[in-house]
Length: 306
Image (tube, rainbow, N blue to C red; front, side, top):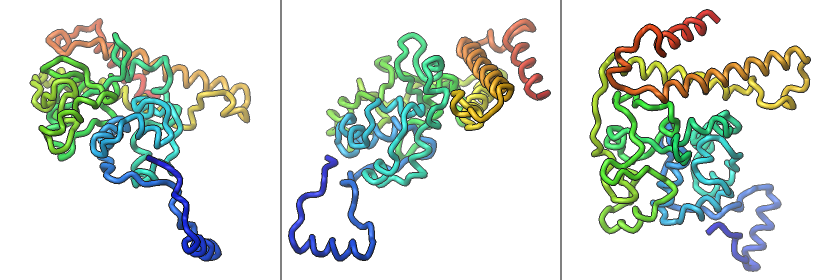
């Protein structure tokens, strides 16, 4: 699929030599893959590359290989690896600025094993792909958002409903690494789409939803918004991950940074685990003075006083 340019004749060789004298870098470095879909706003890498595989009919593993990516797409979502953006842009025609928004910053805490629970199913530890039925229904081109890859994103802020992670018909988990069924059913749909379950082809946008009470919604959205903000703080390059990255600092400065970094990470882990255990029912609406609400209020007060 991506291969060196074929041998050229004498006339072409002469033209190339003349152009090289002018100093122009005109020869394409990569063979272009045509039919690649555009990148949607806030889309995850796994969503984009899955849609590209369906649109171009190129198997997912071959498409990833052409981009020189050995890891699975869900790893790219979390900033686990370094991407050759120039190569990917040259192959796909995608703008480099758009490619930068397809994954979380390289080396973020989301790429660390101790924080894998933020992007996987709690029991199976398989990649988590969530969706909002209303968002998929409204999309001109259905796609999965980056924020939906995180377990702490439990509520769609726009439609105020719980995100789903499986088909309501066959109960199978959404998995963007298995697209064969969509391709096999191409005769029924003009263009295979992430709108349909890969196992039974049920329209995911038709999943039933239940409105949450306003007081529960407020608490839930507050929880995930604050945790999301704390996670983003770890993306700051001023918070180093390894001692080698700030070897020019004094011992006291290193200790201060390490302690600050450790406190922030422990806070994220603790709040995330508590939030993931909450049930969006009457119990949450009636939480008493010794429950998570008290802990949460105290935490917010401490944050404001910093």
